[in-house]
Length: 472
Image 1 (cartoon, rainbow, N blue to C red):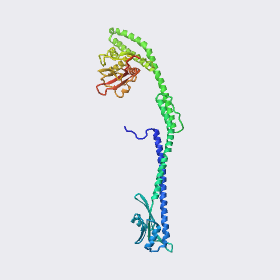
Image 2: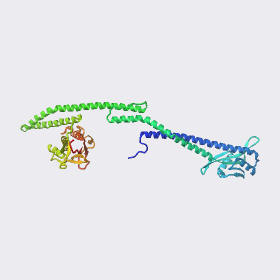
Image 3: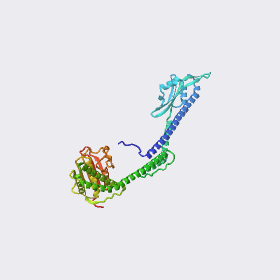
Image 4: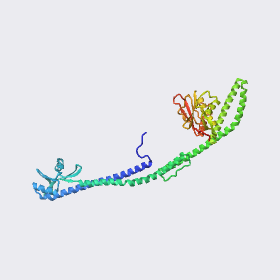
């Protein structure tokens, strides 16, 4: 499984996003301002230095003769300042340690264009400004022509770089100072955004817990308020549907219980009459005898169905009562199989005895329904295992039939569920497994179903109940 990096909660993500946007915005604005200020500072410094050099040249140039000699070139160099070089033809007047920065390409740019040229260079991390200009002479008619004298100067920009670095650190500091108020504003904003979200979560939890009347009051007129109103409308629709469904279920259960009770007495009478007919069936003709036996079988099946419906109605009404007593569990299982004529057909794997406190009648019903289901829908041999595991009673019923299909497995305990929809009638009532599970849960246990997965076992049903040693 891939683990997601970063904050998991919505609040943390909102705060982080808000802080990142604020800090990055402040940093971008500060950095842009620092960059603009740095560029302006460099430009103004360059203009100032260029203006200084040209002013000194204009002051001294009219005082020298043309063509100049070496002394006049030195006087012009001294006027320009340190780290300067003045050239005329083969004559050169130079002084400074950084004149090597003035290369042939720079000299060619100045001499070839007869114009002032500047260039910024960085050597060993230190910035320098190179200035080169030809000295022009003014003719009587006012025209200006190159005199052949070229002046080059090198100026250190380290102090300007320090000021630029200060501006950069100031931008970093501004972004850092924006962090605390950004966090505070993010917490306040996230609290306002997440409050209705938390209320919706609480409402959803109440709805999931069964409180269908839970609602969230909408606040404001934004998207969260629209979502709240939508959820409230959905909850109202669910409440209406569930109320109607519960009413219909209650009516259906009451109807089944009433009909079952009403049918019980006439069915008992009919059964008695048919038993009398069965006693004299041997003297009847073949058709009459077969019809009588069929009527007896169908009546008995109807009686079992009515009894199962009455039992289910007790569970639905919450009137089923558990009567515990200390009994031999193995003896109850064996008696259950013997009473139904299945003791010889089933392999019983159990200890000699196991005394526990439970309701023996309900245990008899559970075992009878599980074994009956295995005999009817599975294939022999059917195995019943009884054992105690970790303070629990385990009774396992397994057959060697085709097993349970994956789509059938979730529904085996549903009432009246038929795995084969083409089979219209079955010997059982369709309630046996549901009644078995209800009786197990009444004991605080459960019945689970599984498939043998091709290990030689078909369907496998396991009853698990707390192993109580004494009567309550």
